[in-house]
Length: 184
Image (tube, rainbow, N blue to C red; front, side, top):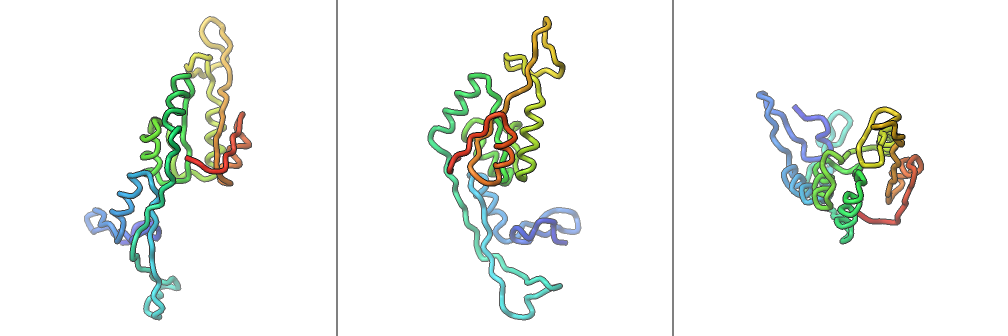
């Protein structure tokens, strides 16, 4: 039984008892992702007619690659400074969850503030959800319009830093959009 999504990798299989048998390269790609890199499968498609099954060519994994998008040296200190100022720092990425957690751990973003495997529209939706939260100015989130002793509670302001076309909708929806050429 082929697992859903197996076309991404080495064709993991499910045994009759429900246990998963990793496909070719799956363990290596997981190790790459745990380092905060993107794991890529390399495959070949034989030219032989017998390699076509159900109209789809069967591909054979022959290797894996790790693509590193290195974290900028200032990223960790920047996240730490923002958090000391009471800023709630989030990471929202289209990358795999394992890779996202590795990067978040490296720069000091709490895992509960990490959204991975997110589409461009999903990134914009996160901005909207964060904007709808209310803040009393002391970092305490509130549901109502007024805090303790009648203090006005403000809608949360959201800034987005993005480095690609996949971030454009979220950048436009944010209160502050910061587009950079490249960087992690």
